[in-house]
Length: 156
Image (cartoon, rainbow, N blue to C red; front, side, top):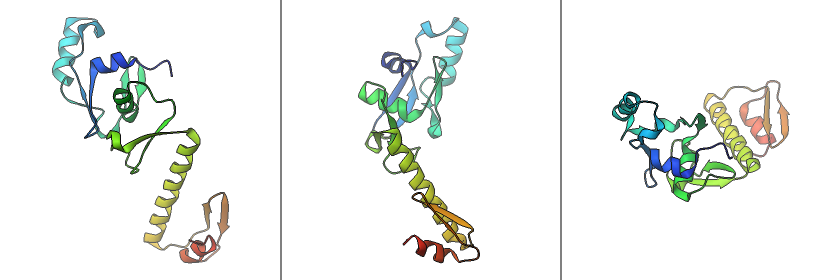
């Protein structure tokens, strides 16, 4: 995307630690502020502190950017052309060894699988009766069957 800040701008304002996945605000150059007052105020409040804590994104040059995209861009020196996935499924783990680039179709499939796994785990825990379950583009309707009956229908 061309509307993202350049890698040079990123490197001026954020430091990335690949081993931990953490991002830290650097002291920004004065050119990014309209006055000395705002420049000093920002520096005191944010410089040296963790950026995008808890997996949040941030606004840079009026663009909302996700933390894992910033980590990828700072490490590789270019913005990702596709989606960024997390190998261990933890969206807060932005270590470079945990990030990988994937197509939008792969991303949708993985997100769908994880959603299905979470849904199954919740239902297994509660052992509640289900009306419907979707899996791999198939739907099973169960009026009053137990959870195990529905799983057996899918061979799970």
